[in-house]
Length: 366
Ligand code: SAM
Ligand code: SF4
Image (cartoon, rainbow, N blue to C red; front, side, top):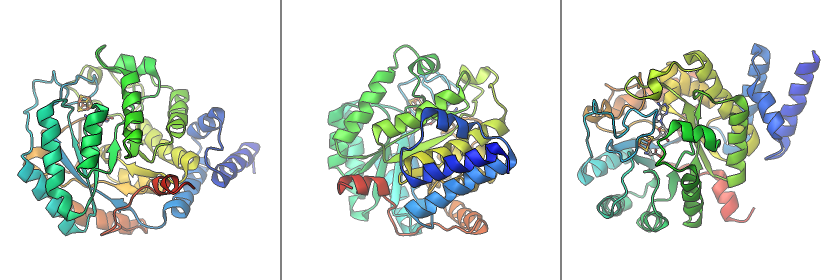
């Protein structure tokens, strides 16, 4: 066995022995793995750790894309405010409740409600109303509704939401500034993550992988950032250009294949560093390869979020090119996922909320 293989084995063994055991240099070394044998060893170690920390099976959340109206203008996002080519929609409370009921009927015990960012009293009240109406379904509810005041987070928490996903997008403030208009503040996003923690949520964050100008050292720092914030959930995936955005008009630094691989390596290395957090295999993986999400699970992810939004709205929630499953119904998505997971020796965890093991450990003081 070569020296580099030996040292990779030693690094993986150290990572598996204890949480947060890797330096930024170690994380960079793992993210730079390219040789097929080394990649195999990296993914196998991360998947084995997923089994140890989260068990067999994949937690499932029904994803509701509640609306594409957004006050922000992130330079990479297909539903950014300035994209006049998008036909805007906002689901009525009845439609969100119907999607939640369908998710429940499928045996999805958790729901994610995601949308563009709106900060207003009317919107805060609307989400409160939705949360009150779905409370009798007894679902785990994740919100992903962007930056809000701590008071708004607290009101939604009191109305029944238990988890919140707010990606930091990149932990490098300079890179963040290049991807967002000057009105967006990286510091506010971090403050929102802290406010979510104070308010008692299971907190999730994440980044896009393969952004123009992003380095492997940036990605290693992103993983350290997750650890420093002691988050419970990770939702991250490859960056995918959207042609109607300013960033999408610039050729990406990396090919689709390279960004997919980077997304998979980020899952594996994050699992090896954080151990018992929930990590989602993002839909963006599937946009780059038909089996992208399954490969995400085999790289250490333990959560999937099949879309339960009514088919007629899906085309209008296109964050990036080649969004998959535009013409599927929620029932088709479920059958497809069952088959895909079966093929890799996994299965969806029906009728289980799938809370973050890390959150429960933290809440019980372990
Ligand atoms: N508006 C909320 C927010 O920004 O936090 C939640 C919805 S937003 C559409 C969800 C995530 O989509 C963002 O955090 C971003 O990482 C991701 N996203 C947007 N454009 C993308 C792109 N072109 N490629 C990959 N992911 C993208
Ligand atoms: Fe709006 Fe979120 Fe897209 Fe930014 S990423 S433009 S906040 S929907």
